[in-house]
Image (tube, rainbow, N blue to C red):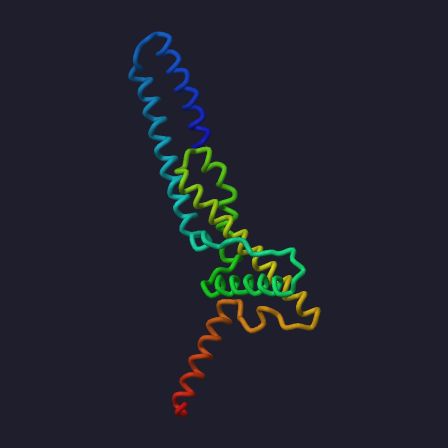
Length: 192
């Protein structure tokens, strides 16, 4: 489609130059070329907008994921606050089912298409939203890596891991909820 459009762009330029030089309107044959170019641009833009809408839908949950906190402070209380903040943020994302692996394919596609979306005149606000979602994906990956690295360091020092008590896979979280419900039912049957 792009090669065909490039050829029609050259033809349009030649037609426009000739019309300007001769101070006239397009001939019927020239008008057909111009109309086919317009139709092709419309088709390309519709396909582009559908693809962009699909990417926005697929990556939408990541739009609000902000960057993990970091610190250079040597104060233990500040470091503890940052570690707890990041762990809490990761738990919250996991409870919403936000796993980087789930979005990796969509992110890679968005990364490949971002520049062509800009170049083709895609709606600016949608391209900006897509960029925020891509940043959200990067933030989620970084958050997971920071918490995992922190957990590994805490374990090497003999302390408890931040994420020890929290299941991280969707199946584990579902199992944890089912176990909680079963324990509540058992307690109610026993009169507690």
